[in-house]
Length: 177
Image 1 (tube, rainbow, N blue to C red):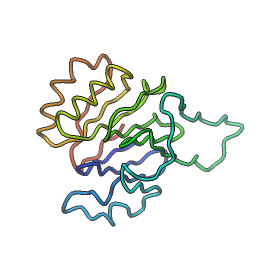
Image 2: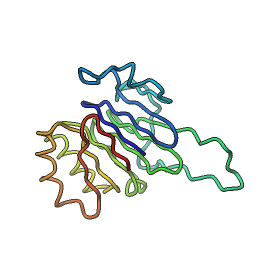
Image 3: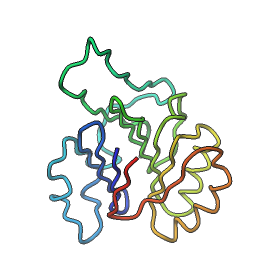
Image 4: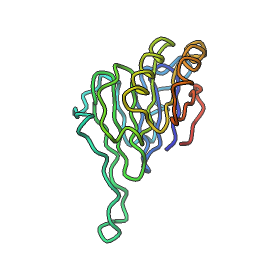
């Protein structure tokens, strides 16, 4: 999985052999939205896009097919709305990916192996990060905010990690997970 955050809630993700782009229209000045979606397999217009909804408590990631059942084609990457401002991405063979620009929903047991990207200002990152770490600590927590937001969030969250990885995304730079 490779995450490239561009600012705001604009992110390009390479996952499960597919390219997924979220909120290309919200990209900051200097980023061409048409170029951003070029070659994308899945484009989600925004966090308010009309995705099928799921219950994040009951949801389970798909499993790798048995060798006997496997085909040469990769399984399709799927995305759902897990609440207002929350997108859940499932790609077979990858950890679940939760993108959170709204309120953190209740999460199931799958969350402990997930990668979660939180978007927002300093207070929003601290609030969302605190909820996640208290209720369903993931494998990795990635913060998508400007420098001031990161300066507020990291000191507030770092002592609460208890085994969860924490990383700040830098606009325009890819992070390989």
